[in-house]
Length: 185
Image (cartoon, rainbow, N blue to C red):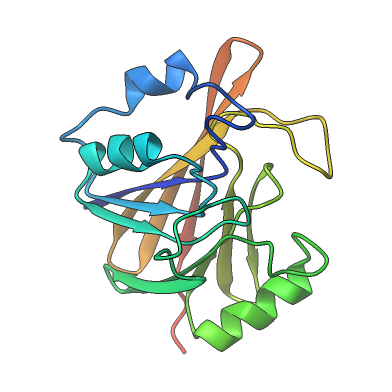
């Protein structure tokens, strides 16, 4: 079992003060093996807090990140899956499935993780998995005012991913589950 935190669009301190306390209670060191971040951490403190959760931290540069060392894209292999990581500001129009599919093909990955829209979304398209963890702080977005704080935990076992979606609806924490099985090629 490989437990992966997928998180992004945190925007501390520009658009939010901190992660919601309900999330901070859940995200503790020693439980998560890897972190994939779609960027827009916006502060060294957030980077350091994520690094404290899991030393295997992968971050791509968001359009508000000031760290020039974060790459635009990254590909990570976990289990039997190649996972591509982008912020999402490169996708035009933002969140467009066909545009995401083009990037997925360019990176040659089984799973594409992207952000930027600040809204959780996960779907299978042409036998590939696409995941957007949303904004972990619920930071406002230029395309919608209806943003619920969210993040994703992926439990990767070989060719299978069990996805746990954590979302705050008001003060209530909602958890949903879905799965993806890599198809033979």
